[in-house]
Image 1 (tube, rainbow, N blue to C red):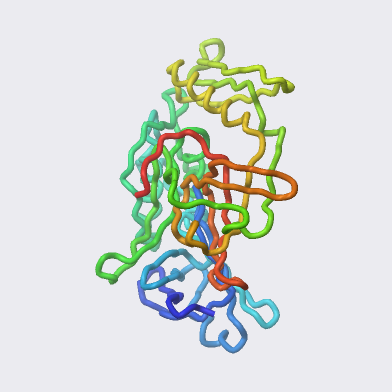
Image 2 (spheres, helix red, strand yellow; image 1 turned 60 degrees about the vertical axis):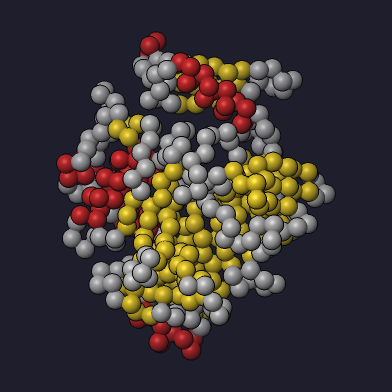
Length: 367
């Protein structure tokens, strides 16, 4: 059941009318992700169905988690279905809305096409277009962050062709896919007067998150059970070729390679907008260093603990992680790419954390 300092609120997406300030959702799990919407799931029991189902109209109801007076998650209810004597609810945060929208005008109604455009501007334009159409305004605000990561060239502009009815969600994801592109995540909070909800797309450049020295994840401390450590030859490479701007024989290319006593494995890093050879060389070296680290931790389950209290991290943060079990001993920096909290888990609150090997990107702070 909802805890004494937690409540679930629902709101009509178009009118802003509050449908309930205390939805009795059980089996609650919610969280955020890097370059994705994050999700929420929960259940309603039979005696609660009649009074609650009208308050969670799928596709047109917002849902929020408030803890200790602060909204910590918000999104759109997408799926409500009875299964036996239990009703299951599923929601996803703000960027999931773009998956249900298309460019019906072409060129985002005059905003494109794009040549050497800052990718962050394309992200804002997609949301501006989506929310400019009647009954399409969620009230989402997109950060004004700028970047030096560009998309589109004179020979190949980044276009939104009306006859293709481009899916806005697919295009939004496309803009942040690849090496050296901006990051985003969805956040939700009360405004200062607590009269309205701020629905935000946080953009990070050169990346979201920070290297955290104040918290950690460790076996025997806050990590529950034995997480899997992945040793994958598919991801390993000691030879990286960075391919940059140009076509044919004029295409820029820089290679970083070492001999390390292992079978030669190669990886091509496609960076079509980069023309500076020194930048290509640096990127190739960085990618090679990353790919030579064999072994990674993809997911851990942690309990609430002073070493890393639940909610003390942000998506994109690097956390020093120690995994020790009968099979392996892993120690290193891991980046949080997703997080899902179960506040009412048996034995106390828990969180499932998705991790990726940390890189050496410059950090942009925690804002």
